[in-house]
Length: 265
Image 1: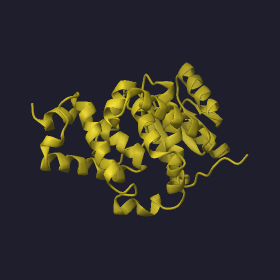
Image 2: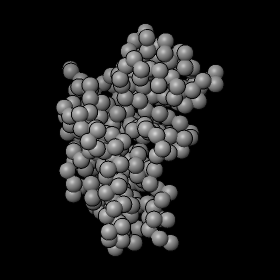
Image 3: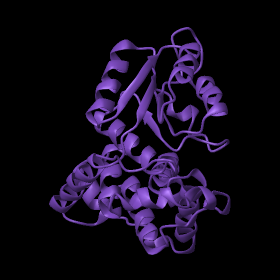
Image 4: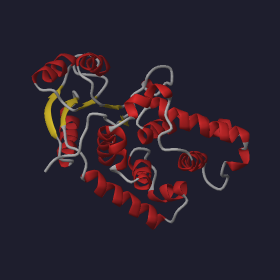
């Protein structure tokens, strides 16, 4: 099997990982493209001693570490200036990589170690360090758009455990818009399919017409968003989700939000 055939199923998820690290779709995709170009130029750099997915992420992160951290698409340069860089600096790069690999991409600790090419105990230490650093970051008001009561309560608990406040839980498009009108949130967590058959995507689109804020989609159908054919969300959680994955996505979304600031005691 060719390298292209081996890595093709994993590319949508590598793009998600790259966006989380970089803070923008275009910037993250620039790194993914550079990785693919490097593999085409020299296929021998693709590790053959580990599974293809681990090899792909290892290759990507080696290239990531060798290039400027502010490598972005020209159209995103203005967005990345200022607060975004300050937020990125709030979480040390290596622990952030380990934490995202573990909680967002779902790699086991030994796989994280294999990707970073370090001992397992060192990888576990990086993940723990990231958790401590994330706990020190910004707090904000969060709107939850979710029609399943138990899932909504689980998400609310996770949000509150991170030190954030929940402005409300909306079960429909109409409820979501009404809650935003009542109190402006700093972050939205949204499902796609809602109780009355309305769309979380449409609710978010309407909200974003009046305010600019980060959004995390939580869905059982990630392939509907990870298409590569249209602007995609930088933050996407697949159901059934791991609590750590939701926490990581919230922290990452706020890190890359250009309006966010450190919580003031």
